Length: 156
Image (cartoon, rainbow, N blue to C red; front, side, top):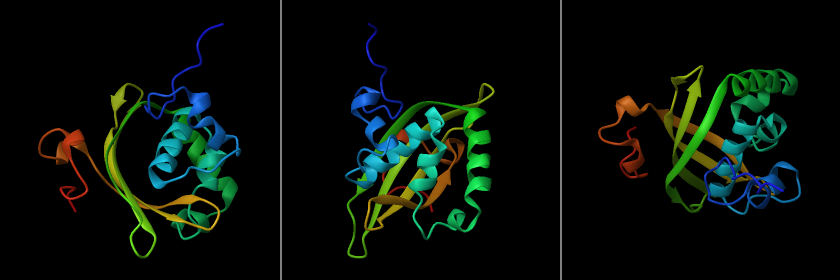
């Protein structure tokens, strides 16, 4: 039997031991970084229902009809490849409950690089960590390698 595939979130673990339990609804990610990694894997594996589930209730896309949102995500995910994720920095929840993760996502559309760096905000909704918002920059807009950024040096 072939070995289980590695997780698309680049954790170094096999998918079945990493993001699969979250995608199947068997567990909730224990922190914001694991949620962010599981969302990246969900894009890579086209698990769009999970992406909807893990949007914070205050995220603007939650105001859209669910089926419309899922249709758009399916189209996006099917047209892109997600070969690599690098988590550069993270910040534990502050006094308001806001946690942050800074990552570099390698993304390609029809062979053309569409990679980006994002500072994501997450908040627990009482059930689990949820994606609240994000600010992205393109690698060309960063001085030096994007993987060298930290939350403190992320351009505003």
